[in-house]
Length: 240
Ligand SMILES: Cc1cc2nc3c(=O)[nH]c(=O)nc-3n(C[C@H](O)[C@H](O)[C@H](O)COP(=O)(O)O)c2cc1C
Image (cartoon, rainbow, N blue to C red; front, side):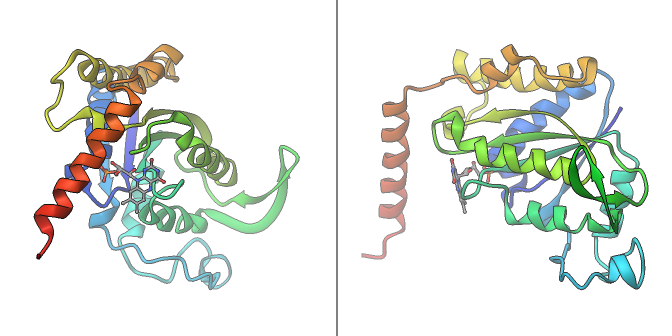
């Protein structure tokens, strides 16, 4: 199985999204997958201008000569796409949305009804499956609800199969040091197990998903720690 991970956090390897993704891909590789990560922050990918050149004048080709050409080529050779994004204001990052919009040349402008729903005809076959990896700062798991719904709809729109997600809320409770408590170690282990399960079974078990998202610190303690952190940062950076 060839997995292409589209990583959409501007923090790249410094961020928590990568912390989770790295472990996930390690598990996938142990199960035999070949993995590759595209860091959208490093790529030059212009926003879709809505000119419809890719549908009308040069079917299947965007007029923008940027890194998206290469990313689409990689996507065509992959069996599974991972969309790895932190929650940004209840959704995916802008980098990810630009990327998704630029997949439109893969579709033909003509409409059809698929599963009782208006869709565009798919121009040619490309990576058939999508899996979501996400983190967020807020504590409650329902902070991922709008993002999950969006990615499920993206999958339908692009004629891909949505095959699940691994989520880590209260992501700052993972701490700076990796695996410095049983709870952190448990969550980190679950990220890796999730990657392995996805390759071996095609799905990630409910048990593994729950472990990945499980409590590391009680809500009040996490809240206090975050606010203390920001107080200290603001003080350190104040000019007075
Ligand atoms: C612009 C912006 C918007 C954010 N919006 C949310 C949000 O709506 N809910 C949430 O739980 N976290 C939110 N966060 C926190 C991020 O999800 C969190 O910091 C995450 O670790 C960022 O990913 P990274 O570590 O890979 O950079 C936001 C962060 C930024 C910078």
